[in-house]
Amino acid sequence: MLNYLRKKISYDNPLRLFWHRVKGVTAAVRYGFPAKRMVVIGVTGTNGKTTTTHMIEHILRSSGKKVAMISTSDFSINGKHKPNLSKKTTMSPFKTQKFLSDCVKKKVDYAVIEASSHALHQSRLWGIPFAISVITNITHEHLDYHGTMEKYAEAKKILFKNVSKNCRRKESETIHHIPHIKAFVLNTADKYYDKFKEVHCPVNIDYGLERGDLRAKDITYTKYGSKFAMKYHGQTVGVNLPLAGGFNVENALAATGVALACKLSLEEIKNALNSFEGVGGRMERIKSPKGFEVIVDFALTPDALDKLYKVLKETTEGRLIGLIGSCGDRDKEKRPAMGEIVASYCDLTIVTDEEPYTEDPKVIMQAVLAGAKKVKKMGDSLKLIEDRYEAMEHAIKNAQPGDVVVVTGMGSFQTRSMNNGPIVWDEREVAREIISKYA
Image 1 (cartoon, helix red, strand yellow):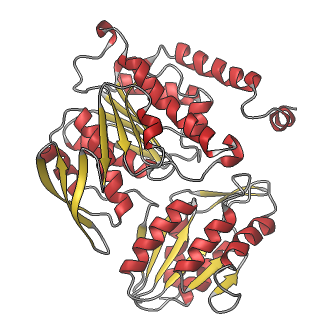
Image 2 (cartoon, one colour):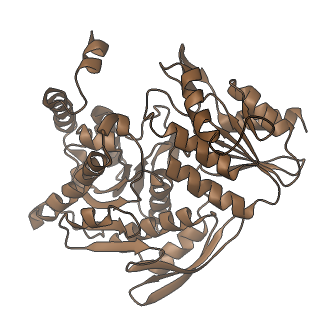
Image 3 (cartoon, one colour):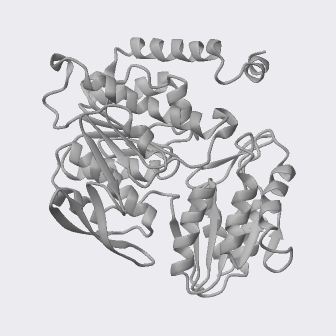
């Protein structure tokens, strides 16, 4: 009955939103509004949220701060990490408030929360007075839920309206003993930048590669990292980020903006960024003794795929071999675009199954394949291999020295959601198993 009602009542139905709000309020009251005793930082956007969240946690903790984190990939309290097995970017309000309550017990000062548009729209974060909000970017995603890009952006703005409201709180209600200022951290390169500027906040830290108070200049990229000069209000430091790609430089700038709002120095921030090792399942490289690499990445939007493959195309000596699928019960419009993007960059594109949930996996794969066919004809450069293990095996078995095999969509997930329920699946372990089979 509950599932029937969910299908019949639209996502933005006032009754449904009221029910979400009731749960959010109940959870906050149940746990005594624990977030009021911490400086809470919200990270939202389409792509780059998880990496940015981890960067912020790493920078603050490297500076001796007591920090907790909620992200798509994992949770942490004062450096002790455990995987997020829920596959949700932001947990239910009860789990979130319980986590924040645990943070108070561990005397955490800063909590970094990766905030999804769904969670913001559904009041899962109700009762959390965010002090700092950062947005990475807004690109095509979740239109199955929000309907339009404008409504998607409006959901993201809820986080910034929260901070704006928090800016108007009485001084007696603010946290004086934890260094911070209330601020927006905004990406000047994002097409919705001006829309977010419309929300009032006394302090805006604007970042970008081309414009903004916080900028990266003189950037040089290598296969394994990015070197750049980071400038802010007349100060400059040299950063050697161990992550490749302009999108990761943007993530580093976003994290830096938050750290500046937490009153860290550029020198402290630089040192932390230089030691940041990345996030599991995000552009994670697995080397083969035969001289090729397998890269496992979470990219599941057209924009994320385009940015990822652009970096790899520029740094790969041999061929690019890409495996691409798409998640079921999610935004269907993006599937052909994803297939087309991967096929345009790769020497060999393999369309395969991913996580169908309740959908027919063949229908999903055909939609992705239709996009890929706009670029390539079926044959040696474009294949459909329905079984994901067999697809990975074909790619790895045929990879040569200098090649890069790219497997996207699953990242650090440890299960796959199939028609008959979840199955155990860690993309990285599958890649290692197949590599050892053909070593």
